[in-house]
Amino acid sequence: MLREIYITQTNCITPLGFDVESNVEAILRGDSGIQLQNDISLMPNSFYASIISDEKINSAFAKISTETKYSRLEKMMILALEPIIKNSGVELNSKAAFILSTTKGNVTALKNDSVDSFTNAHLDVLAKNVAVFFGFQTPPIVVSNACVSGILAISVAKRMIQSGLYDHAFVVAGDEVSEFVLSGFNAFQAMSDLPCKPYSKNRTGVSLGEATAAVLVTAETANAKIKVIGDSSINDANHISGPSRTGEGLFRSIQNALKEAQIEAAKIDYISAHGTATPFNDEMEAIALNRLGLQNAPVNSLKGFYGHTLGASGLLETVISIESANQNKLFESKGFDEIGVSEPINVIEKNEEKTIDFFLKTASGFGGCNTAVIFEKVKNN
Image (tube, helix red, strand yellow):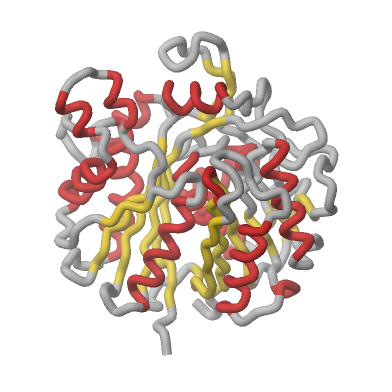
C-alpha cells in the first residue's frame, strides 16, 4: 500500500501580497497584479505585466536576514519558504527533501559578463544557495520542465515520499520577469497589448508575471490542508512552442491522474487550468476537457490576477486553489468575457460558493509537456 500524501503548509510571494491570506483577499476584491509597466531596462516600450516592487522584496527580506549576497529571485524564494519551514517544526534531516522548481532561474545574472555571473545563472547554484540558507542536509533537487515545473514538483515530491526516500519535501517554485523572458515571448508575438483574457473571444496573448510559492508535501496527516491523490505528466512532443491541436498530452495526463485517484471525471468539482490566453493553449485545453467529459466542471485561469509566472504558475495556482477548496469558494476567471474556444467549457465568471471535495490542477508548456494533479479535501481536519 502506497503512503498517502498531503500538503500541510502553503505560502506565496506575489504582487498581490506576501502571504496566502492577503492574496485570497485581493482575488475576492477583484484586484489584479497586472499593471502597465514602463521600465526600459526590461523592454523599450510599455507593456502589461505583474511585477513585485524591489522595495517590498528588500524590506521583507531585511526582516529575516542581513545577508546581501542573495539575488532578487533567491530572496523571493527564501521569503516563500521561511514561514513554512519555521511553522512546520520539521527537522531538516536526511528524510527532508528540498525541491526547487523554476523555468529560467537567475537568468538575469547573465547581464554581467563574468565567470561568477555565468556560474550564478546555473539552476543547481540557485538551488544550493537557497538550500544552504536554511541548512538542508539533503542535496537539492531541481525541477525545470518549462511551464509545468511548479505543479510537476508536487508530483516529484509525492513519488519520492511514496518510494520511502523521504518523509517530507519542501517545495519552492519561482520565476521573475526579465528582459530575456519578455523578449522571448515578444519574439513569438505572444504578448497581449492589454491585461490577458483567458478563454475569451478577443484574447490577444499572455501577460507575464513573477511570483514564488512554497508548500510542504508530507506523509503526515497533522495540519493537512489537502490530499494529493493522483498525478500524471505526458509529453506529446507536438512542437517546440505549440501545443497538440487535439490536446493529446493533456488528455492523457488527466486520464492517468483520474485512474490513479480512482475517481470518475464527474467527481471533479473544480478545475484550475493553465489558461495562458494564447489562441492555441486555450483551444487545446477546451478540446482536452471535452474529450474527458469535463466540459461542465467549473474552470478558471488565475493568469488574469498574476499573469503567466512561468515555472511558478503551477505551484502558485495550486496554493490558491487549495484555499478555494477549503473555503468552498470558486474564484472568478479574471478578464473573461465572451467564450472564445470551439468547445464548450464552464468558465467561472464571478466568485461564488460551491462545495469542493475534489479539484484538478493542470499545466502545459513548451516542448509539449503536460501535467495534471488531482487533490482531495481532507475531511474533519
